[in-house]
Length: 251
Image 1: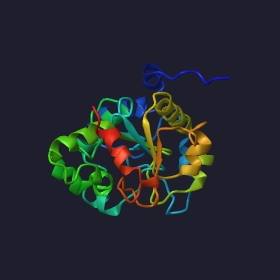
Image 2: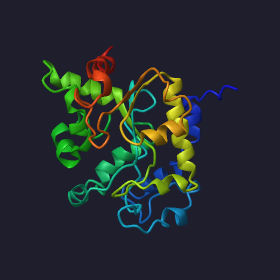
Image 3: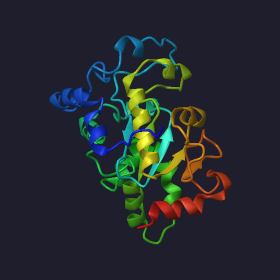
């Protein structure tokens, strides 16, 4: 039996982050003491992991999806947003202006894959370089680099399997009975349904278990080294970087 079709209005209506979004907006875009999907995820479960490397950093805003995921041509499937002490020290996680942009992502209201963002590009590269450098091979050495950069920012999005920050990934995250994990599945199914380019960057075995028929999906790309978040000639399996780049930048 075929799975029910997923539409944009359904995804917006079922968005588990609505309550958090409202509270953060009321708090002038400053994080709360504990930031999670109110009425959807159990706080006690989120706090039940005591291992320091896997501890969920609830003091930070979750980052479930980044970029214009509903309209993007390509979506990177990853594990979860990490925790970087340098980013914490430079204020990336707590700055109200940055959090306003992150909230816009959760509302599906932001056009670009932040921090690969044409607006104040140098600032974002310095504040949060992880995906900036991971996607850089798509635009570097191009004749009209600024225009190509903008296309990448518009056409690429990121979906995290687990939306909360931690220093390291822990498989136990997937055993927590969280509604946000169900929402991850719906977003991933929507990407397949719409024929988007899917790049499985991290957690391939989990994504293949989660999303039916993903392994046989024809518009799928995987990384040679999942520990290196680089969309580059040497890191796209089967020498398909040029093909992938052409698809992302095509009109």
